[in-house]
Structures are given as structure tokens and as C-alpha cells.
Amino acid sequence: MDRLKPNVWEDDTRMNVLFSPFREKSLNPTSWTQKMKFWIQIIEDEHKLTNKCILERKYLPQMFSRKGKLPCCLDTVLSEMLSLGKIRKLQDSDILQAPSEGSGKGWLTWGYDTLVKSPISWGWKTLVKEGADEDNTKYILESCLNDQCSKVLQRVQCQMYCDIINSVIEYSEAYTQCGDLCSSELEFKVVIQQAIKEKKAVISSDQDIIIIKFCSQNDDTVKKISEEDLKIYRIKKTSAMLMDKVEKLSAVSERLKTEALHYKNKNLKQNALRTFRQYKRIQERISKLTNSIDLLDDILHRISHAASEEMIVKAIESGSQALKSINERNDLDKVSDIMDVLSQTIQDQEEIQNELSRLDREDEESLEASLESLLLEDKKPALDDQPADGRGEQTPTADELSELLLGLKLPDVPDSSPQKDAKRDVSQDAIFIPDISASEKVKRSKEAV
Image (cartoon, rainbow, N blue to C red; front, side, top):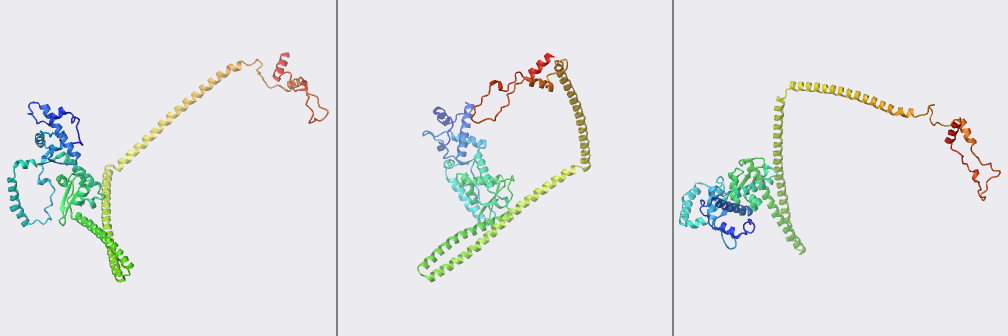
């Protein structure tokens, strides 16, 4: 119980009450119901955690041992779960049995089972004490069984790369793939039997070997094992058997090769040749078996490919039928009328858009005219500020420029060429500095006039 501990498991006072026997339900129905729910929930959770679907009455108290104490109320819990349908007694019908068809059970076997085996079994059970029989009672937890059945079916379906090829497998192969989902082989047989009851699986026998067919992911229920399924299963079985033979012959071939080399190194020529002949024969046999395996694998591949093509053809057929039914509902004249209406509607919409765009152009022209008028009003005060003669500050004329040049003082022309070592001695009066600016001279000439 160390794996799963409820919140109240460390509360000694509360656990003493839960471990004690049940009182009469009429005395305190609420407390009785809460206690019953606690034990039902903890029993189901513990069995789900350990991948168990079979509950053994004899070992149930030991599962919930706490500080050396065992619960004394589990018999009442089991009776309540049995009445609620949460558990049922394990019977032979709940365990997977070999199918009667093809098992070789004839009249002699039937007579032995009916007239000898069954009476002896009944007499032995009658002599055994009833109390001891009750102590070994086993129950099936329905919720855990359904959960394990779903897990097994899901794992098998995930490994089916082709429904028609991998749907039928041997019982031993199924147990190898999914045995870890159950705590024992007995529980695995119970799970498979439950899948058969739910029509998720079906069993048959081939040469005293139990084979199982599971439903595919696209089907809700499994189909019966057909003769085609048996033929495919036999091809797979033959291929696996040949592969096993090839592996064994390969080991023998390596041993013969080693022996031949050993004899040759010891100069035992005859022994070396005889061993080497055996080695060559084994190699030829391996080659033939390998070719046979390749042929069988190719047949299985073609079957898988044909199954896929059949699915594609069925899908195309369904699609063509659906398209045909849709086209029958859509009359050609009706479609033509609808297209005419659509064309007229689009034309009307374009005319409406043209009218709206024309109004937008008129509004734009009106806005541009208003903007021009505002600009003219802004320029009018600037014209009023100009002089009365209508002239502003203009470029000086030729006469005005001549008067300006008269006021300039230019340096005299030198008599000799300049020398490199001579120091430049230029007086301040010889520098080209106008006495007044051109604009100031023009302004003064105007004032003089």
C-alpha cells in the first residue's frame, strides 16, 4: 500500500474508524455511505495501479495493511460492490478457452468430459469445506477489466500496418506483445475473453494453435476469421518457420566452415574436403530457403498493396457517387439562371460605383477651387504693402552701377614684376574696400532724387 496513500491514511483516528466493521446503515446513512465510497475507490485505484483486474478475497486485507492492522470491513465492501455490479465472481466462462471447432474433440472426448470428468469434479467440490472455498473466491473488477481491455486493443491496433495482413495473430504472439499490461497470464486470458464478449476480437484454431483476430481501428466490431485470413496467416507462419530454419542452418554453416579450416591447418585433407562439401550443401540450402522467404514476403506485400488499392477504389467509387448525387440536385438551367442573375447584379454594382466615383470627383474639384480662393486672399495683403510706384527692391540698372563704381578706390598698377623674397607691403588704403554697399548707394541715390 506504499504506492497509493489517501490523504487520511496518516490520520490514526480516522483510519481506526475506517478499519472497523460497518455498523447498521440506518444508524448513520451518511457516514456509512462515505466509508463505503472510500473503500470502493481505494480498491479500484490500487488494482488499476498494479494492472490487476482480478480481486482475490483471501489476499485483499493484506493489500491494505497499516501499522500491523488489517481492515475488518472488507467483506461488507465486497458484498456491496457485488450488489452494485462493480465486481463479479470469476468463472470458467470468463477465462479464454481453446475453441471447440478444429480442436479434435469428438464423441469419445465429449463422453469422457460429461460422464467422468464433470461428476468427479462436482463430487470433489462437494467434499471440500464451504468456508475454505469462500476464502479462495476470486472476483473480476469491471472497471479495471474494461481499462485493460482497451489498452490491449489499442496496442495491437497500433502495430497493424495493414489490417488484412496483421489482423490475425497467434495467442502466444499477442501475449508477447501485450503481456506486460496484465499482472499474470490468467488476467490476460480474462482480458481476451472480455474482448471476445464485446465483439472486439474472435478466436479460432489452426493445427491446435489458438489464433486471434482483432478489430481494426476503422471498425467497431470484428469480422469473422475467413478462409482468406487463414491463408494469409499460413503464409506468415511458413515465412517465419523458414526464417528460423535459415538461422539454424547459418549456425551449422559457420561451424562447418570453422572445422574445414581446422582440418586444413592440420593437413587432414580428406576431412577438410568432406567438411567443406557439407558446408557448400548447407549454403545452397540456405540460398534456396532465402529465395522462398523473399517470394513469400513479396506475396504478402502484393496482398497488402492490393488491399490498399481496393480501399482506394472504394473511396473513389463513394466520391463519384456523392458527386453524381450533388450534380443531379444542381440543374444546368438553374445554374445558368443563377449565373445570369449574378452577372446582372455585378453590372449594377459597377454602375453604382461609377456614380459614386463621379460625385467624389465633383467634390474634389469644389475643394480645389475653395483652396485656390483661400490662397489668393492670403496673397492680397502682401501686394497692398508694396510701394505706390509698384516697385520693390529691384536689381540696380547700368547707370546706378556706374555711380557705385565711382565711389570705389582701386590700387595703382605696379611698375615692376613681383619678387619672391620681397615682403609684401600693401597699405591699408590700397585694399579693395568699398566705402558703402551697393544697396545703400542705390537707396541714397533715390533719396537724392
